[in-house]
Image (cartoon, rainbow, N blue to C red; front, side, top):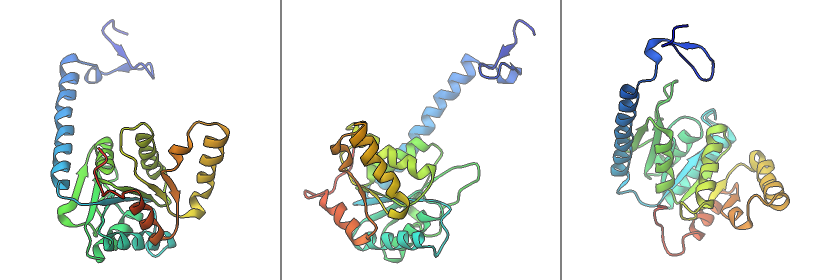
Amino acid sequence: MKKSDRKDVVSGKVLPPDKEFSLQTDFAGDGWRVFKIMAEFVSGFEKMSDIGPSVSVFGSTRLDSGTPDYILAERMGRLLAEEGFSVITGGGPGAMEAANKGAQEAGGVSIGFNIELPNQQSPNLYIDRDRILTFQYFFVRKVMFLKYSQAFIVLPGGFGTMDEFFEAATIIQTGKSSRFPVILMGSDYWEGFYTWMQEKMYKEKRYISNKELDILFMEDDPDRVIGIIKSFYPEGYKLNF
């Protein structure tokens, strides 16, 4: 190996010349990336500047139309719109499509925070055309969800759904956001997880406090979900940060 050859610190393999680190090109690339991130924030803030009270609905992209969870998400989106809430989703298919569909068909504001992915997720057809925001960076998208939502409704889902759930729980726990309700819908799916948090995380290990648990709910009835959300805001709705 030549003295000038460089190795990957993980694999130990020799890096080709075009993969070698360069102070000039790599730091310059990071600098331009900052401007791209800023642009995503500015565009998002501008499009959401006139939005009223909003609720984000999360759930699996793999949820098929006509299934019980899809119907539940659609009903929840419709009821939120009827109660005057804008409905925000991740913009994709499955539970997100269902919630957007319910909101739009009820005449409400239907918003989608789409994300650029290798498999090219396309926005679903039930988002208001002027309310589609597409992000390259997950963390920018998360900030938008957290900033503009008065509640999170979490339907059955996978890693992405769990990520959004724990993001909300953590940012509320650490005081980086005002407190807002995080509601798990689909008790047959969430019951074991919800019980584990209560029994293992709180009662046995004391890794969380009772105060940190009191923002979390498990409720299957959309009307009661509306009641939970309203009970959190006796003095009116406001942005979280």
